[in-house]
Length: 154
Image 1 (cartoon, rainbow, N blue to C red):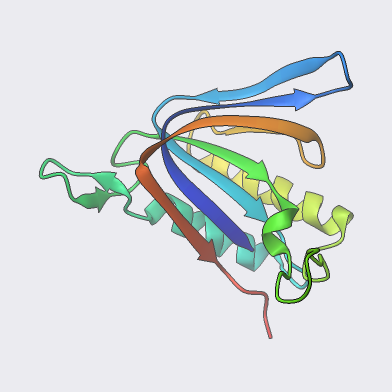
Image 2 (image 1 turned 60 degrees about the vertical axis):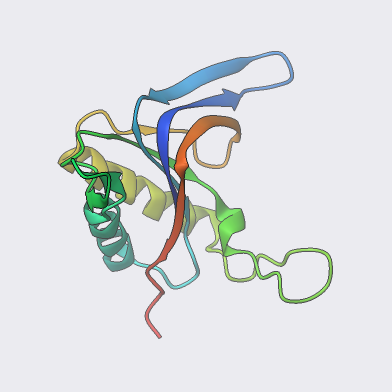
């Protein structure tokens, strides 16, 4: 599994239902937005490890302004957004290949698993909708952006 994480001062996600209807799916204040891709071969073990890393990754400032606090220590919010394009192979040509991305059914199952486990450990976790066309708005605080990856078993 891959996560592109950003420390944010605020974020929101809108799901586009059709050309004239949209739904506000989630809003957070200060915290972390994680764009998440499921790769072929990923299992619940990768989701569990990724969640552990998301919750423990120290990207929030302590009293001295150093990135020493994790999400819970900082009292931050979490938003998870499914984004299969992070699994793209961009090594050849001018068009990405998605051969490394999980099939949609597997991606949905593991993303939902990750989301459920996150909600078990942290109240108020927000999310978009898997497979939907979404518009994500955020204010990146720093800017601070990292990529985390828990590779599928070999």
